[in-house]
View 1 (cartoon, rainbow, N blue to C red):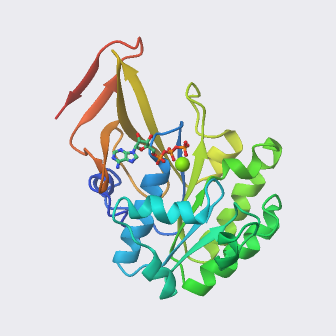
View 2: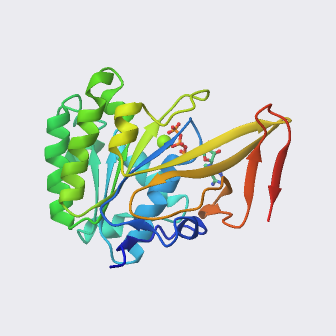
View 3: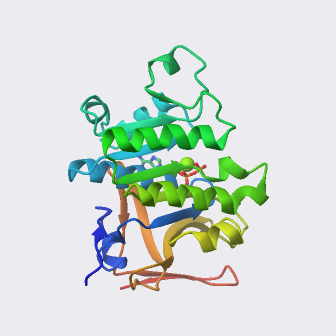
Amino acid sequence: MAVERVKTGIEGLDEILHGGIPRRNIVLLSGGPGTGKTILAQQFLFNGLLAGEPGVYVALEEHPVQVRVNMAQFGWEVRKFEEEGLFAIVDAFTGGIGEAARRERYVVRAPDEFEAMVDVLRAAVRDVGAVRAVVDSVTTLYITKPVAARGIVMQLKRVLSGLGCTSFLISQVSVTERGFGGPGVEHAADGIIRLDLDEIKGRLYRSLIVWKMRGTSHSMNRHPFEITDRGIIVHAKKTLSVGVSQGEVLSHE
Ligand SMILES: Nc1ncnc2c1ncn2[C@@H]1O[C@H](COP(=O)(O)OP(=O)(O)OP(=O)(O)O)[C@@H](O)[C@H]1O
Ligand SMILES: [Mg+2]
């Protein structure tokens, strides 16, 4: 039986995933600062809304108001979908403090308590009937307690996958780190997509690589991508090879 897939709707990305992300997979979206993780994840959610698939975004890094403003800059207006009950932002940022936070529907009162966050997330996923979910970022959930990382990711997997969601968990790694967020987390996830920025001869190059994706074959190449004012475009037919010695950069068809 063919595996059921969720299309990211991001140009080039479904192609290198050989059709999309297998349904219910929990995918670690990892990379250093400014590599495009948040934008890619928000585009995945918005494309879902356009395709009639409700979604939930858990904001741990930014104020929900800022999330809406940032998304709108790419033409991704989520207000209408929130009003129609098809999209929800879980505010795990403000703790309910402040005027703007009082207008949020899904607020985690104790953002430091993982269980409290999961309860609000579960309610949001059920209310909107979400089939796509994003947690931005999971790193925030265990940065002060690395031993809890695997347990936290496993529980998110049980909850999100159990409720039928295909999800991106954003994992922050430092600029020099080669991994994806730590051994427990990397093995618990069903998939890993790594986003990179490499400085070569005074210029930054963006690329991504699908490191693993349970349930499907996928491109084994490192693909260059761009961020435009309409979102991310992945060059599925191109390979970026970054020399180990920080030498040349080859980009070819
Ligand atoms: N309209 C735009 N056009 C082109 N590039 C943009 C645009 N808006 C943002 N960017 C690029 O996207 C980057 C931010 O991407 P994003 O917020 O997704 O990063 P991130 O991986 O989530 O980083 P962090 O881990 O710090 O949250 C900016 O640093 C900038 O280079
Ligand atoms: Mg981000």
